[in-house]
Image 1 (cartoon, rainbow, N blue to C red):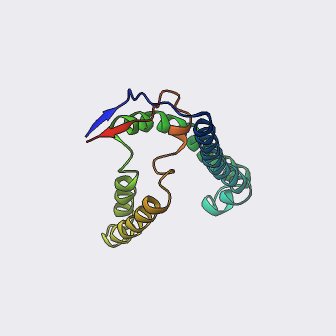
Image 2 (image 1 turned 30 degrees about the vertical axis):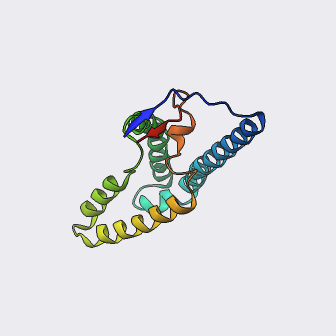
Image 3 (image 1 turned 90 degrees about the vertical axis):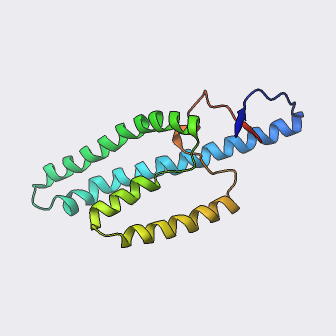
Length: 156
């Protein structure tokens, strides 16, 4: 498959407005979901996670530990988006995090059963997403903020 980036086609003003509106809505929805995740975690880090994950610590240390984990995720996410966004733009975003999650499941449970269940669920979700959400496959924080990413067309 060859990617062609120099495509000369003109959009009408109406088509341009429609495509611009779709891009703005997709970026807004994606960003809202992404940052809502941080809002929920930060709220739970202050209220619940200290007591839940660090029960043997004093309350201040437990809360600070839970916010420390939040900080690591907050810092690591843009770095991961930069690194994996680069590779996603070069080789495509078809694999996703499935191999990483399957490896983590195997390490956590020392059994192949959770991996088999995860692969089955991932396959069902992937097929449903491909069928019903064609415009949203491969879009995440790394793609939303990447100014150099150009849409490509495939030539057979």
